[in-house]
Structures are given as structure tokens and as C-alpha cells.
Amino acid sequence: MLIQPVILSGGSGTRLWPLSREKYPKQLLPLIGKDSLLQATVRRVEGIAGVDLAAPMVVCNEEYRFVIAEQLRVMGKPGTVVLEPKGRNTAPALTIAALAASQNGADPVLLVMPADHVILDKAAFQQVVRQGASLADGGAVVTFGITPDAPETGYGYIQTGAAFQADGALRIARFVEKPDLQTAESYLAEGNYLWNSGLFMVRASTWLNALKVCRPDILTACNAAWAAGKSDGEFIRVGTDEFAACPSDSIDYAVMERIARPDADAQLPAGVVIPLSAGWSDVGAWDALWKALPKDGQGNAVQGDVLLQDCTNTLALSDGRLIACIGVNDLVVIETADAILVSHKDKTQDVKKIVDQLKAAGRSEGQTHRKVFRPWGSYDSVDTGTRFQVKRIIVKPGAALSLQMHYHRAEHWIVVSGTAKVTKGEETLLLSENESTYIPLGTIHRLENPGRVELEMIEVQSGSYLGEDDIVRFEDVYGR
Image (tube, rainbow, N blue to C red; front, side):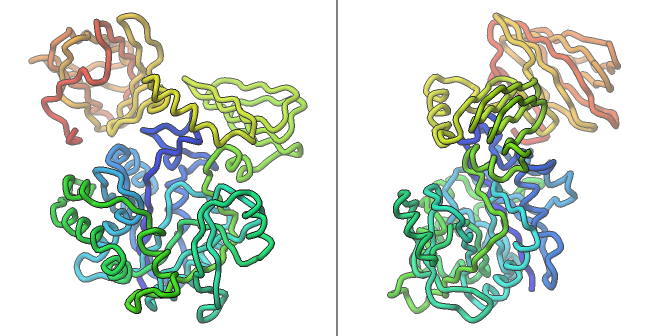
């Protein structure tokens, strides 16, 4: 049996601001361990006994394509990256993945996983995946319900029905929305409700046939988008206009709730849920991350440069600078280069309101970090003032920036380490450590790293306008 891992990497994770930003969301961050949540999702399926495992397929927003491709590359798992020109929720994303997986007559079992969840017990997860694969191979649509240990109001729930075949699998009686506390407590007391994990297993053909019955409009739009698509290097692009015309809907609303109805169409497959107890969390807010992280004897979870004195049940994460906390309880303190969050743990769901304020004010902190990743490397805006900006630039070995020009700024480049190949008008020169050059305003130029080690540079910009949109590109190997 062939299992095709499908990783859905949408969403912006605004409740994990300031670490998660709109243009660098939580699934790309190493919140637990050295791997990003996306990388941890890929590793979670490695070594499943008794199945053939295809290379991962990631469905993601075009904005994140280069970072995701790089994270897969460093793992040695290049896989397939399918780009959504516009977010249309999980049902169209899965449909595009099913169409991609069905090429050349294939019909694998799709293991559909959000990229931004945490599962601490890999062995328990793989055990239910093997069970789910057998059921999905037989034509069922399988989801995994998390065994609840608290009356959570931040999750949707699945009510379970009668046993389905063997080994603990259950028919889905119904899906219910996020409840209030009293309702959640009643679900916990009844014992036949599970948290809705957003994890699924289904054959590609089963999903497409179910969609033909439940949401033929989505299937038609996705078929058109796929037919209009093309391969672009390591990426698969679907038709932009065709996908934009696709209705937006979730997997649950489009199919799962419909197949769980007592009066469901006879053509539809069985909807099955398998209970899962594996340390799962959707890491939807800082309090959820605190629960998932290891803690000291006083219930504190820390990462980075942190000092605590007489603190309890506190989450403190430093991205660079020292955090020192004294005598605090149930506090969340998150430090990044350009923003600091301080919140009571009970109020972490309200972080989104701060992000909304940043957007309304047109502030960049809601969208980007000070350090910005590009396909060629990264830049960090170290300092900014009236008519000047200083950046630390890292260029990967063999990488090159676009051939470009600026209307409103000049640039000074100083090589800190490595070797820079600089195109400046008709001139080409090589710069080594401690050497520099000047790019006058309006001069066509390009920066390349011809070496085998990273190139580190300091760039000093000066001029009347220093925005990133003051770039005229003449050539770009990344198609921007």
C-alpha cells in the first residue's frame, strides 16, 4: 500500500505573534526542538512499518514557497510543493493534492496533516496511521479524534457512533462547533466526544468521488485550475484565475459533515474516526505551547536567554536578548528583535487583537520579522533612520540576487566574510573580507556568492525612499 503524506501549510498563526508573522507563520518556526513544525510533521511519518511511503507533498501559499522548499531540502526530503495562488481553505487544497497524487494512474492513500500541529508520541501516531491506512484503502474516509483530557472550548468536537469493523474505529455521528465551557464539560462527562484534529486519511479517488457528490462546484474549479497549471522548477503551480474562482470551504463542511448524516447519499463513503492519544496540540496560542513544552519543577517553560527568580507556570521565550522575570505567575513573555509580548496565560487568545491593531496602523511588525528570508539567503534590518538603513545580508553558496536597479537609494556594500561577485553597470568585480564597493542611485547591479561558504555583508542604504518595493528587476532566477 502506498501512503502519500499531504501537508497543508496554510494559515498565518496570528495568535503566536510576535514569533509567528503573516509572512513567516508558525509552521515555519522551531517552536519545539530544532525542527520547524513543518519539518516535524514530515519526520512524524518516517519509518511507518508495513507501508510504502511516498515523498511528502506540501500544499502552501506562494508567499512561503522558497522557505518551505529550503526546509525540505536540508532534511533531504525535497518532495513536491504545490502552490495555491490564493487561499481557498482545506477542501480545495486537498482536492488539488488528490489530483496531483493521481497522476499517471496512481491512487494512493492520502495522509492529510496540518503543518502546524504538535504530536509528541510518534509511535502512538504511527500505530493509528497504520490502522487508518487499512480502512482508507478499503474505501472509508478516516479522521483521527483526540481523546480529550479537559473541557476545551478552543476545539471542535466529533461525536462518535457505533463501532466500525474492529480495533476501536468508530462511525462519525456528527461534528460540532467549538462549544462554550458548560457544553464542553458535558461532552467530557458523556465520554463519546473527541477533539477534531484535522487529520485525515482517504484514497485520492475516494475523496474526488465524494466531492463529486457533495461539492461538484469545488471539484470543477479545481479540475480547471489543475488543467491550467504548470511545473515551475521545483514547484507545481495551478491556474491562478481558475483557482481564484473556486469556492472556499473546509474538509469538514464540504464532505465530512455530509457523509456523517443519517440520510447521507448511498454513493458516499463511510465516515470513520479513530481515537488518538499521542500528545497532540494545534499550538493555537501561547498557553497551548506552554502545555506542550517541557517544564521545570515550578511549571516554567523557557527557551533562549532567560533568567527566572521565584516564578511559577510562566512561559518565557527569548529570540536574542536576555529576559529576566522576578516573582511572576502564569505569565507569557516573548522576545523578538523588533517586538516583545507580555500577556497573562488566560489572555493569550487575545493576541490576535494586537495583530489587528498593527494591521490597522499599517505597521510592519504584524507581517514581517526584522530578519527576512529570501530564496538566496536572508537580510536583517539592523538599524533604520531618516534617509538611511543598515542591513546584515547573508547569501547562500552559489546563490545570486536579481539583476536590479533602485530609483531612490544608493548602497554601500562591505564584505564581512566570504567572497562577493558584484555586477555594477558594465563592471564586474570580486570582493573579499574587509573590501567594499558603492552602488550609485540608478545603477544596474547584482550581488552573487561564487564561493562554497556563506557570504556575509553589511549594506548601508541612503536615499529619499528605502522601501523594498523600490526594486526594478531585469533578471531573476527565482521568477519574481
